Length: 524
Image (tube, rainbow, N blue to C red; front, side):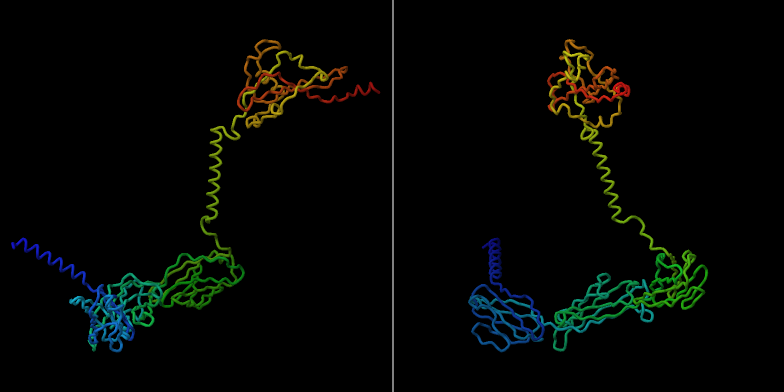
């Protein structure tokens, strides 16, 4: 066999061996079991084929030969559906400290022995965590903006504890170091773990009198965790404030000026009113300064009373100075007898109202511009061409027939309905004579009986009705009433076509004749 053939043979053998090994692997579930001392724990080994025998090795115990019908020592029981189903496992009724470690199962399958391993962790409760402060303050207190360091230690736990940090109920994540885990052996040769984690941050004013908490979370603790805490005492000078404005003081009564400041330790205070100094706990004329009142967590209320508050007191300058061993701070105070001034600027409601109003106005203006440009709505030109009809057979003189010989023709309601347009409404008022003159100018210049009257197209007219007032003063012997002639202008049809030619129709408006004084005398 040459070298090439030998190499190919060896490769095939290795591949077949590996495939057989993978196919004969023992599956152990779970891979890791955590139990406290005295609690039960179960482990199951599965091969997927029939098992001839099953042997399990547990730390601190003798080797167990397990089977459904085999008698087991006290404290152990068979776990699984049977060897014929390819399953073999063990149930530990009460876990001991010495059981901590690997659990191995050995399965006999068709003359071969396969094995699998699981990890049994017997949880041991660590000691209460210890919180150590690495930065030493002055008299047990820390100053603002100084660096602060501390560490938390959880001793002898199994598995290692998980450490978390809190400032009161607020979790801390910044400035934490990576946890360090150190393993040790106890007297029973059991492995235990110690965890150390540190924190580094700068002291703030808000840290004063708050609890720094180191919490160790572990499976074996009854509540799941144990805490170690320390209260931080922070010392700082009085903290600055913006201009203090007080409103609503009543003139004529005792005015009380209150200012709340933060400082630690307790500050000494002094008021200065228009160049006059009032120490805390003293009185000067109508002014009395009180001792700072401790409100807790480093807050103090400083008060000044003014007896018989006057209008002049409201325009004076008030200056408060607070100081302690870490520094001093001045506060400016202004008082007023009026109600609190409104906040600067407009609120949300007025702003929204203004914006909506502006938008509505812009929309209306836009609609007007569009309507005017496109000739819609009130800007549309409703003055369509109208035919001005004149009679072909009647002259002007013949039209003025006596009332008893006048027989009006029936006219459709559409033709006498006034057609009011936007331009007509706002058109400049004209006198009757002017209207008559314009109407006559708009008519073709022709006389009665002139041919071609029907051939000319009608002219456009702005007025639907043209009234010609030709009232003349009647003679005494004339018993006819005053007559006003109204010429009715025809309107084109809605389809835009010119109405068929008809004679112009006229109506007489009769004014009742008022009797004259001379006629009365003659009658008498």
